Image (cartoon, rainbow, N blue to C red):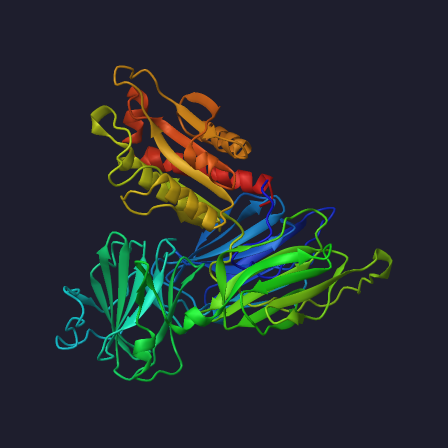
Length: 593
């Protein structure tokens, strides 16, 4: 298993225990009239909660707890569609409250309360459908002065890829992180353009416009200027504040209004050309860059290094030490220490909390005390770590549990799986009987794999979400840059058309992916009617150049008489996708990822 030290998201508060016997979930109920989930265990637990989108669902994990019975699905009604209770891992029971598609929750209003260590309640706000203000007049819809062709249909309701948040705007980019983000304000101050390099917008956003009456914005437009550049345009009031833009680990573009703006700021925000590359001169470029988080002095210190002076503050909450660094941004990627079993720190989580704030959360290993934060140098933040002898550790008596920490960010999930639909765009891949090609089936299967995994609370990104070409280098770079835990590439096989007798499943690995390949391969054979053509070791580019366990699954032969007929059917492709997903889940559980 690949060692981990750093993920660009928190998972909330981690508490580790090794009980001799698993706790039991004794009962649970959902009180529809109160929008409240209530559950009870036979021993004290500490739930971990997180909110996940697409579709929106609240996931509550009970560490060290055994359900002892099959998964239960209970339909609820409008807004909250159903509640599902099942055994997620060997020692973790998972409760999922799933919302009806199109509804969402405000995470700040979700309250988890411990009445006693064994009795808990989760209070949910009323689910809401996002709404938008009325469509502006025809005069308001006049195109941006710098736009040759603006969107023609302005909408009242938001797209699934565009949301108005409590702080600004969010545009989902399907996991595509822009190579560069640049902002430019028009001379009259009425339009702000955000340029995104190497990004393809979701199809349902391209050349669309949405009316808005928030944050001094009256209209938002989406343009795909070329295959390598997208643009988001905000129609604003003439003397309104400027905006900041940055990529979020939620998988999209976050737009936040600045507190103050003057007419002279438009020049400061104009992008310039530097060696043919669009460069933003906005205030965000002046932020300190957090370059690394490292262990030093034989594990006696955790050091956070920046490229210029920073001022950090620290707080201690529920056993986790949180370092807040304002006026800072994260390097891509942030480098970290080598990980081993004797490390004094058990968990480190780093994220860009907002456009100008970096947060580092640290949990010490057992027997290690975190001392007060200090700054030996202007560009260096140090967190002293002191090992405490076991004889000096006192265990307090049990007491009434206090409510857990607030629900973490929607993106804070345990495992990140990169699913890679092979080929695409100009590269149609293999073509078989009846003209069926790889591009006809690989993206639907991959999307179904992602759907099944997300239903189980696993974070998923795809190397492509449209029928477009992505290079092999681009696929592996995306997985490595995202620090994915697993990489699953999906393909379909072929051979000479004169050999329709050749059919079956093949799964390939290169080095660290052998166990993952075995688990997925066996899971598919147990649940899908397909011949076994065994596991094989291969030096495919995407297997050799990914830094995590990686596999390539050939879901059947397009030139095979049996496989081609099956792969044409949607039901078979869904069964194949579910089997792949279950194999991934089994591997995650076996390796405690």
